[in-house]
Structures are given as C-alpha cells and as structure tokens.
Length: 137
Image (cartoon, rainbow, N blue to C red):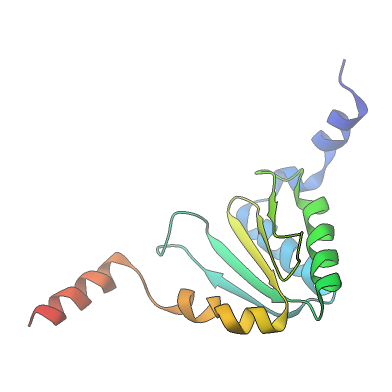
C-alpha cells in the first residue's frame, strides 16, 4: 500500500513535464515571486551539465532565499528532483533541476560573477576548433 506522500508525488503534474515545459514553469514561478532581470541561456551544444541556465536576481538576501525556497518546494518532486546550495548566506543560491540550472543572486553578487557574459560566449566544439586553426595561421 502506498502512503499519501507517494500518492501525492505520483499525481503531481510536474512529474510529466517535458524539458521545455519545466523551463516555462521555472520562469513563470520566478516571475510570480518577483525575481528581477530573469534571463535564460541555452546551453545545448555548450555543455552536457544541463540544457538551460536561468539567472535571476532578488533585491535582498531575504528575497533571494524566499524565491529559492519557493522554487525548490515546487521542483523537488519534479522529474529529476532538485538540489539546492547556498541558502546559508543567500547571496547566490543555486538550484539544479536536472536539465535546468537556476542561479538566484543579490544584484551586487550577480554583477561581480557576471555569469551571463561567461556563458554567452559561443563554446561549441566547431567554434573552438575554428579559433584554434585561426590562431595557428
């Protein structure tokens, strides 16, 4: 006999979300929680760690923690579960939902690390090979 937790988890619609549906679910949740400057970076072809990276900001450590906690509670029963890091200080909280990695920053910390710039560079193997060939000329 299944307990009520298992029944609830089995009937949770997030369990059957495709990668695209999960991405939209995360973005909508961040918008609902008043996260700011939400961007989505497509990682397909750049890395095997995830398909998408979402970066967002909260105005304070309290807001960053609240946004992250709320999203974690929604994603932990998702198709890939969810891992959470950084809640102790809540300057930068990372959520790993399998195909999507979510970074939630305080604005100053986001500016300092500037992940958008790092991941916006085209790191595809073809581009890297072309750059290496050009460098040898």
